[in-house]
Length: 121
Image (cartoon, rainbow, N blue to C red; front, side, top):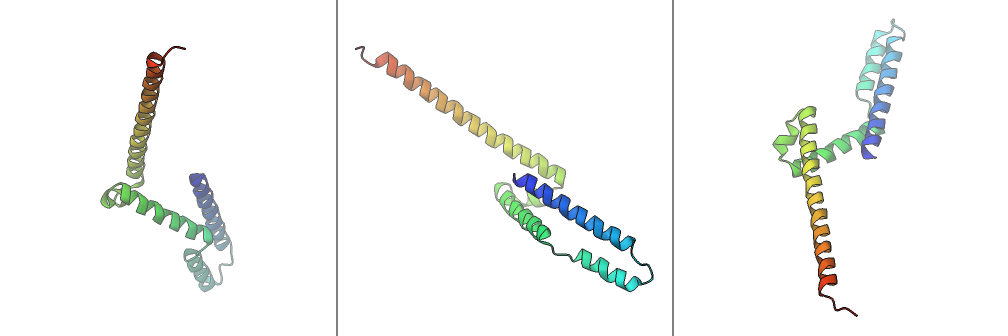
């Protein structure tokens, strides 16, 4: 759900910025100083969606820098980050599957010992 919320915020921010740029392009061409001021305001626009996205990116960068080395994560391009994240998810999944298998084996051994060693009534 976090990824869906991030995608919605990115789409909202992109569409809002595109609409603002479209309004500037279709606006009055005679007052060019005013258009420059408007375009500078769009670039420095500090909407809540941008703030939420930047906080989320900073949090993910900090968390992933702890799990991986900071040089590996911060110097990677998006494709490399996706590969690193996939490897990390695969390792965690493997560990969880091994843990589940061990729990099943221990439970099977316990059940076998309960039935084979327990006295018959």
